[in-house]
Length: 72
Image 1 (cartoon, rainbow, N blue to C red):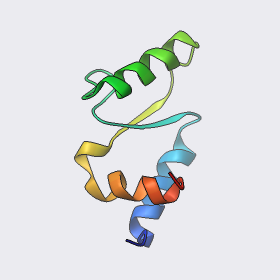
Image 2: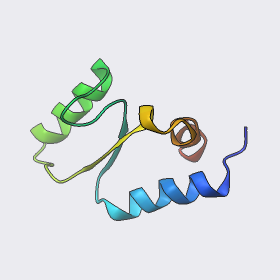
Image 3: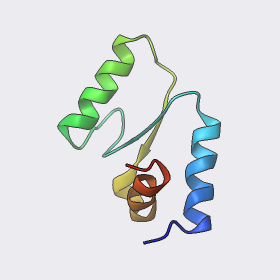
Image 4: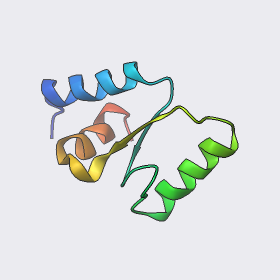
């Protein structure tokens, strides 16, 4: 599937708003998988407290689109 312009804009806006942007399952307060929880722990351990967390479970277009956007 092609990344639509609306989803691409949403992803790019989030990235521009945050020095560090984490697209994760859940939120930093309530991670919904082990990988997301570990990523939050690593960022905090590195002293990164002001990062944006985007819950991809709340937006399926971004959940799928971020894969294409990041060439993952």
